[in-house]
Each structure stands twice: as C-alpha cells, then as structure tokens.
Length: 191
Image (cartoon, helix red, strand yellow):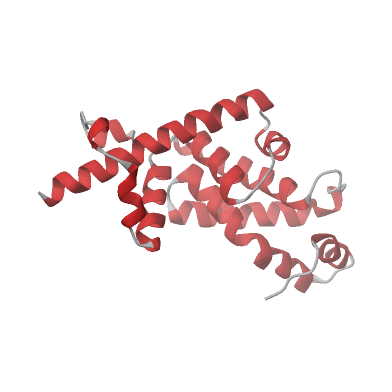
C-alpha cells in the first residue's frame, strides 16, 4: 500500500477524519512496535505500549508543531511510554553472560553468517538485540533499522549527540559479542 505524506494525514485527522489517523497508525505501527519491543523485550507489553503511545499521540496531535518530523515526535512518545513501563516493572533483560558462561569469543567467526539463510540471519540479529541493554537496542534500532539521524534520536531519547554515539559504539560492540556467543552456544549445543 502506498501512503500519503504524514502532514496530509495529520491535517485530515485534525479536521475530524479518524480514518486518516488509522492510516497514520498503519503507516508507522511496525516501526513503533519494534522500538517498544527493543526496550521491553516482551511482545504483549510492547503491543500495549504501542497502542497506548498511539492513543497519546492522537490526543496530543493538535500540539504537534511540525518542527521535527512526525516520526521523530511519534517515536519519542513510544520511547517514553515503553521506558515508563520498563521503570514500573523493572524488567531489565538478563545479560547474555548469565545465559552463556565463559564463551570463547576468539573461536567464533562472523564468516559463518554469510552461509546462513536470510531468516536465520534475522533471527540471530533479533536474539542479539534482545541481549543488549534496552538503550543500546533502542539506539541501534532507531539508527539502523528505522534510519533516524543522530539529531532525531537526540530528540526521541532526550540524550546528547555524544551519548548516542557512545551507545551506538557500545551497542555495535555488544551486538557482535552477543551474536558470537549465541553462535558459539548453538555450535556447542549441536555437538
């Protein structure tokens, strides 16, 4: 389905056309859900956070000034909603070190990724992202999967550019380590 520009849907919604807001939801629900899932690491909780964020966005739509892109504004609402739920439940992810102890990282090579099928790569990437701290996972998701600029991520997460760059660096490093450990663990399990 080909979508219109966000500002057209926003204008129609503000004039009372609820179907236009439905189109905005359809256009952005996948990315909003992905961001919530990266933080909460629980599908049901992420679905609820995404729904609540879209409701908050709807009720606050008249305050959207258009200074930033709509997606930046929306992702900030999703991020804050998910972060609030994370704080309430204190459901921080278990570190991969607790799951796979003393994995020998030097014996695992990423060259093996080239031979994996696309779905296996996606699954491995998902597992690796799930093992990261919520902030690292969110920054990597926003930057690489949702193609947000560092400036936009600053607005969404209320962090400085330097903090985002540090999270990107650490996140990439930790993602690599996570993937290496996961593949090492799977190899050991097969033996």
